[in-house]
Length: 402
Image (cartoon, rainbow, N blue to C red; front, top):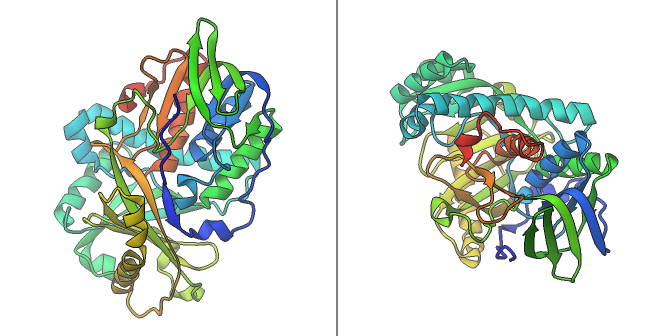
């Protein structure tokens, strides 16, 4: 039982040319025994492995590809508590109490990630930021004003800005926006490799390339058989396979989406907007953007239900030009030159929430399926939920992600 291979990205992401994006791993695997096996060495697997290793669990990580070279490499790494589904809309779908828990848990996850990075001294260009959510064709200024009020009522630091205040403060012409505290930016590959290195220092072993082709649960745990004929025996197994869905999981709950991203050549420091906040908009197709540590503008969006990797990659040049034109329109007066362009795939769910639950029909196995645009924030939550599951505890928010 192996997960189907998927081409999750195309083009050349900016992170591919950054330092500290390679992590040492073992290529020779004979037979391993451990407390927990983590299948997948992207950001979700790295955070889960580190969370478990910190608690003294013996962890083995396996990946069929080189670590951190799947969806993690395609991420634009805007770390936010805000979900793709607005709080008001999520309350209609899940109920007010669960929606509030989801948003508060996401807010706490961003803070927890910053603390984790500090605790382990991970060099990954982490920087706390505010986030600016612009009115667009899906939600106008009145909807954003209601959203900001709702967030404040549940204790989240969000403030509505009218059009004139938005223009005078940020130089952006929209009818309104929400400015929120509690966001951040990061280099996603440096973060993932840094977490893997930290887990290794605590005793975790990382093997690559080794594909798990069969899963045999038994009374004492689970045996994971690899394509090379080797076996990893574990008490528990965690599948952090991201947007590659496991056989047997509810595929009808997810929809594969293609997305595109660009990075400009470096700009003068004074070319950036106040506070270098993360910027995104309530529009379809939407635009989002952030600054990088080396003074580039990184932007993404133009999402499409295009599922063919070949057609997705063929569309990259045109999508990149459209993204650049949108950034130029939103931030006039700046001379922007395209430097990087790439494409990626992610799985979307009706609520924008991920699937974090024991795998159906696979005892001792847990599935972490990152969905929507908040992948890294959800990966932090997933690591916390997984740690509780391994230790026989029920996470108070488990129902949100099932």
